[in-house]
Length: 591
Image (cartoon, rainbow, N blue to C red; front, side, top):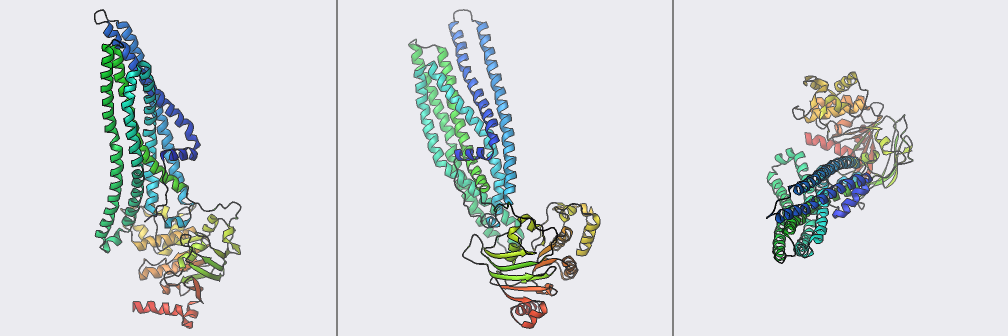
């Protein structure tokens, strides 16, 4: 599972990082929030006009009502509310557009980031955790910014505007309403301080849960065959309970704010009515003031509920935004400005000179201790050894997936660390033991990221790998979409990846037990295809079944990060050393 190294983030911190992430957000978001505030302020004028209507009616109880004055005030109210509605619409339109563009940009940059962080990053963070950041966290942040932030600005403007209008209308009644409302602010502040850690814990636990689900479902066959369902359920239940606990605490603490604000608002009504009634009886104010204040109290206390709900969403957004920006701020691979590209014509001569390497997350354990070897152009080099000897690590170093601690790896006499990573990667075709096919047509999977491939080239590669007959049986041949409706075996998937490597036609090859998932007959066909593929190409074969590398030009026997033997198959058998023991032990196991 992932090791969480993310730090905690406040709402202000996430907003600051958002604006520094995309400076173009400032102006449209400021305009939208200004419109939201203006729309809220306009609605505040309404109670004052309603107060005038009340006074006109109360003063006309024993005389003719001035309908013209009432009509004039009504038109003013209609104009105010129409303008307020237009401002609100424009604000929603701007915020929706801006936040959707922001989420698009964040997902684009998160996708780019995945390809520029060191490989060691994925040793500490699960794939499900990263998936959660790209999908769930970005959506949470976008929705909070689009909905909650404008509502909070509007509520704040409404709150301040009401406060001014109330004190301008009758300071004693305003003081009573403010005193009651002040209690709401105190409660909301306490609840916010207590609940923030639970919102952060909720996002952390959600990422952990997503990572676990992704791992378990990708290995569902292993889970079932191992009869580990009960163990999986128990582990999942524990993670689910942790998520529930954090979610319950965050929702409970934030949820009590809104009903408390409602109670406090009702107390405000009571205070205004009692004090207003006393002032009316003393003849100091008219009935219209009480009507206006009842409206003001509603407009004054309702923002507190909006602010409380908005703060709940913004706290969730802060936790989600923290996850996003922690990943975007993770250490990237060093810049390669000034480094050269690989030569256009590559012969394939490779030199390993005193290579030493240890993984960044475990620098105390040396994996490759002092590795030196020379590979002639066009040679087929097999790398063998027990588990943990450093076979895959060596290939990763050759590909520059990791940087060596000391020593040099050269291709055609040029150190790989003097060439850009991309140009080094372009030198190699790869066929891995773990096959990878994406949802797309057979053709798209075979010509992956390569243009100008003809049907004749596709057919030739597929016939060489013994997969062409299977493709002919598919409903649309090369244009058949490989999805869940197409039954395809592990061996057929591996043959397709071998055909893909043939079509890519890179000058050098890396093969990681490329025939491990095929039967004996297909292995013979594939082995001939691999011999054709590796002809006149420098190729590195990570071999587990030693019978597949008899024709290798050079076999490197690794143990504990060092070469202990090297030579051809016949030479190593004749020595009767470690390789001979490995080779004979495989035959003993199959005997």
